[in-house]
Image 1 (cartoon, protein in one colour):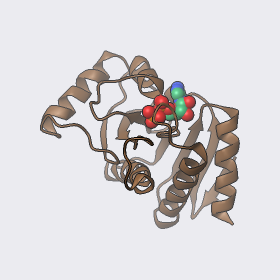
Image 2: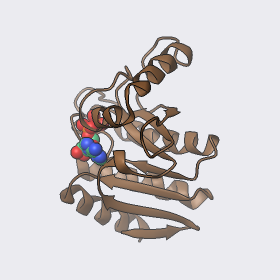
Image 3: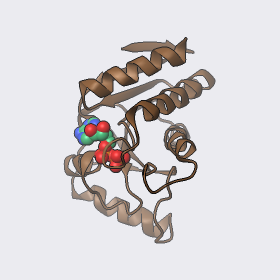
Image 4: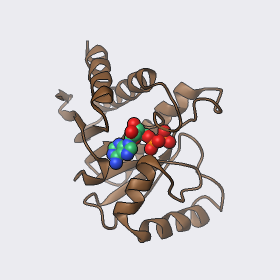
Length: 183
Ligand code: ADP
């Protein structure tokens, strides 16, 4: 499904985010930025070992050795990926980040988009942040993601946003929510 919003394009598709050719892809990382399972592991594997080194450097130099906070985002190169950049963000964990989960998930999308704009990028692909091992209900996550992205595109001349869903079920949920947000 593709829609035009204020001269921008928003596309929802099924696919593997590591194969996307947008300027940046977004990684649903954890605060350590050391790779992991799910989409994080797939991105590190496809990007190569340089990505882990870059993430270590970001933690030392930009985060003073601290974890990347939930809802925040940082950018690195994409190394062996088709995408030139990876924007790493940390989604909220449904069962442990008890307060402001909805706002924190919205912040992931907002801050990733902001960092893309700040770096002069005009296309970005997102995975379904927090809905894997972080257990955020897909229905609610999709509503937040679609609302946040549509609000952003209504306010900015950006370019293209791709939502890359990993299952047909997720694709259906995100398309239903997008249609509702656009009504
Ligand atoms: P989180 O820890 O934020 O929940 P996960 O990686 O566990 O992140 O899952 C987030 C979503 O990413 C899930 O819907 C999962 O199916 C999906 N996913 C896993 N691998 C890929 C991939 N290669 N491309 C796109 N989406 C993926």
